[in-house]
Length: 435
Image (cartoon, rainbow, N blue to C red):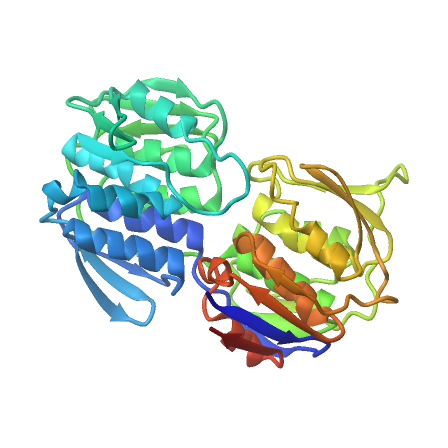
């Protein structure tokens, strides 16, 4: 297990470029299973979750070539079907939450798949009902093998249908889309997720020969085709990393420029940080965050306390609430952070309280943060990263704190952030990785 040692109190300065989007990468890399032809994907983030998915595909028999530092070619023309039914495959899937995304492509092309309970962040219940219900509507049948603890899914014939999703699940929508593109007839998905990641997946599939309309809306129409062909695709910048860097700059009082952010795909993210009083300058396709001595939380028009909550796109992504909560600890004013989707994602606040933050945890979903207005900086502490987003939030807190902090279990941060200590050190941070 590795740890970060962080010397707090150093201001950052310079430019930083966000990596490719983690969530999009997991979707579009899984989609290569839908064709026998080569698929080239560019701007692939060099992170643990993506490496694990690529490793899983390699063991499945996919021919994989790294073309450049962040570009890969995949060709799934000779899959090992015996491996897909074996225990090693099931165990690997159980350690990687993104592995659930291979189910749709396998069903669409081979009419058979296996599902174990996937791994990932420990942030409360993350049900798979949306995936399963949508796939069942297309004609798949689930059989639970109690001895192995896995679902065996058969789909001798997939047929298009109309469906209303019980929730706008991003990965659930992606899985259903990838199942439906090779089904017979037309599928309509209402209450579909419409995040930029889903839009990118649909555009890539259309380039491969799929017929998907309604992209960027919550009503998708998919006309099934008999086969897909190869393509080239470039992954968007990671909006979560962009938001992380905005919060990091404000919290440490730094002047930084975030390059090539694909501003039109950030949605409400800049506005949400502006509600915390952070100045965001949009320059071309870059974001400049000037040095902040103070930043003040806005109030609603009626004067009531600001509340920031997550919501399905185009609402605020839940992945940024941990960062916004940390940033609020040094703002002027109070704010309610309402994490609606995951019941355990706010439980890392006890570590911030130990560092001197004033936070009232109301329940598993809500926390009130009373900002210090930079009058009482946080102090260093020893802590452990419970998940990707809480991990980066704790790193931001440690970088702003007086003294030295130690964060263990940083493999969680590595799952979502590429060489984070190297990139931040280049801006002036003092972070050391130890084993």
